[in-house]
Amino acid sequence: AHMNEEQQDHTITNPTSWWEGIRNYCHTSEKWLDPFLQEMVYGGTAGRFTNRSRSNFPRWELVKRWIAENEEWAKQQNLGPSAKEEDERPLGFVDNKEIVLVRHASERQLLAHWFPTPLKATKLELIYSTNVHGRTVERFYHHVAHVVYSITIMEILDKEHTLLGMFASQTWHKNVKGYGNGECFVFRLRPNSVCFPFQPTSGNDAGQIMRSGEDFISMGIAKDGSSGLRLNEDFTKGTTSPLNKSFGNGILYENEVFDIGLVEVYRLVREVDGRPIDSFDTTLL
Image (tube, rainbow, N blue to C red; front, side, top):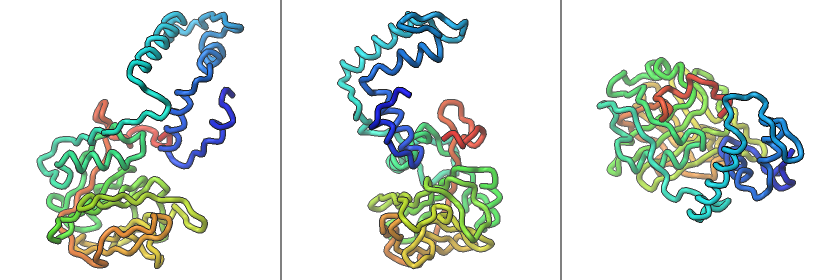
């Protein structure tokens, strides 16, 4: 009710844009907090606040003091509505001696940069490795069966030790017709790191970004209608095709067919308490 026309017109297309809108609104110069506290917390009108017996909410005098102190701190730090962190922290990881592909902080920093905003404060936990759990798509399905958000990273057997990957925002399962949503993306960690997120365009359905079956898993939509990145049933071979306009017409890898070495899959756990993010309502993200 307190938003201006420009704020109301802010387009929400994914969690990142939602959080960006919240950040912009909270940095507005308009006096939106007083009316909100009046109506929802203290029950007063015309500048008079009376506590609604909410013992878990601080007194109004304290709130005003905290606001003033925070505003003064923000001025000293020269923070404005468009301030952003130039150097994002790399994702942490749950220490596991079996982890190989994301040991380097620089690679986990890239992943943090590409993640939707609500998922940046997370750690990576290894849940599947071809070195440990076997090299079959069935073993893969078994280990990701209860995981919503996951990252699959594969090592290409070439001289550059190329790393390609897929960020899944839904649980991998057998569905050749397609599933997924606009949070999914494919990427190359090295060399020449690049991320190809889904970009909604006319005639392209985000519900077909992920495809998987008895003998393959894949992600991304190619110009020829095939998958942008696909792994075979024993994770020894992969294929790529030039991505369509929904993924920026990107090219993940120069060769259409390639050999795969190690494959690792990670789930996301909360940095604050180490619990998997799948253990609470992910529809709020």
